[in-house]
Amino acid sequence: MKRVFIDMMWREVAVRYPPKRIISLVPSQTELLYDLGLSEEVIGITKFCVHPHEWFRNKQRVGGTKNLNLEAIKALSPDLIIANKEENTQDQIEALAKEFPVWISDIDTFDEALTMITAIGALVNKESESITMRNNIERSFERLIIPSQPTPLRVAYFIWYQPWMGVGSNTFVHSMLEKLSWINVLADDCRYPEIDISKLKAVRPDWLLLSSEPFPFNEQHAVELQQLLPQAKIAFVDGEMFSWYGSRLQKALAYFQQLLQDLK
Image (cartoon, rainbow, N blue to C red; front, top):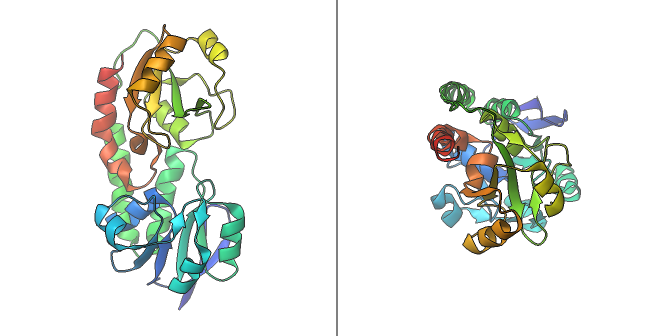
């Protein structure tokens, strides 16, 4: 039996239901499929799908998110491919969609992440489990306590080195910064701007947040950045907590609560 679903790009996707041979091309959504209990159904993942570790070790990998091995995917004969507008490349996804059902997510906000969780739950015959997960995530963030501050903290979130790059508005990371009641000083720029240090000095961020991914910042980068922006404080942050928009959000409350206490 086939069912038609509407993905987050407003495309109709006809899927043999329930799907039994699923390939996930998005790390955070791979982890979601695991937490929904689809151990047997997921047959392929990317080399960046590091959670859960047992899947990373044992599931067949089909290339990187932006450099897929199309022949390996075709050889697996999937009845569903789960992709993402930002994390995958348009030409490869369009090529796959000519032969297989491809459901595409498009996520810039916390609310869109919740929508994706229940949409994928319905797509893979795990609707009740996904609704429970969504409700748990919503309730956990309602318990987030924002420390009292005279003024909101002003932050710059860094994702890359040489050149320095950060996160602007219309991104999931920006949405999470808003959840913490922080002001993203790069919000008026493009989604992922190259950072002009002189301009950053002018807006005087309180904190520079160095993400653990996609670039693995370390103390050497913090020292270099501190010399460039001595008035700002620097913190290393867990990029998965800020940018993985699937079931990892279930683990985010404790992390963010501690971060709010540490960064004042």
